[in-house]
Image (cartoon, rainbow, N blue to C red; front, side):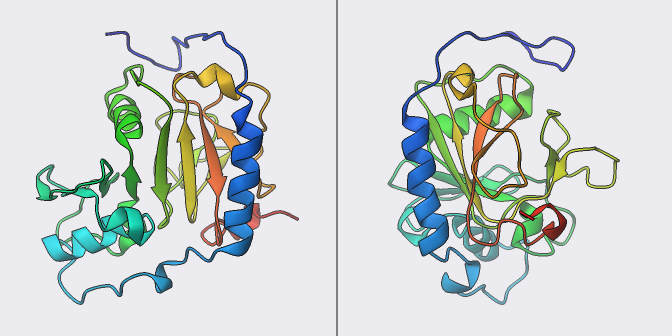
Length: 222
C-alpha cells in the first residue's frame, strides 16, 4: 500500500466536479437558516466523561439527531459502544486522556458515512484513501484545529503553524478524487466552503456551519 508524506506528494489528475457549486449553495442555506448548535440537541448527561453513556452522547451529537441517533458508536478504546442501523459511524478523533475528555469539543467527535470512515482510517495510518465514492462527515462540536496546508498537524495550536484554524461546527466532503476540488478556494477566513490539505491525497472540502469561528474569532470574516 502506498504511503503519503509531505516529502512524497502524489499528483492526481482529474476534472473539477460540477456538483461543488450545488453543495456550496445547499450548505450556505443550512448555515444561514439552521442553528446546528449543541444546545438544541439532547442534554449532556451528568456522568463521568469516560463512561459509555457520555461518550455515546458526545460522539452522536456531532451530527444531527436524525443521523446520530441511528449511528454505530465507537468508544475511545476502539470498542463498539452501540450498534447502529443507518451505515453511519460516530467516534472521537482525539485520544481520551485519563479520566475522560474535558468536553465534547476536546474529543473532536465526528459522524461519518462509510466512505468518510475509509478516508479517516487512511489519514490516521498515513496511507492513500481507498474509497468507493465521495464521503461525508459531520463535526458539530468542531475540532482542535490543524494547519490548513500541512497534513498531520492536528491539535498543534501552539506549534507556530502559519495557517492554523481551530474549527467550530462544520461538515466535510471527502472526494474520491481529490483533484475534483481543483479551483476551489483554500481561504478559511471568508466563511465560505474551502479546501483543506490542497495537493495531497487528503484534500477535502470544509463546509462551515453556524458558530464556525467560535474557537478562533480572529479568523472570522472581516
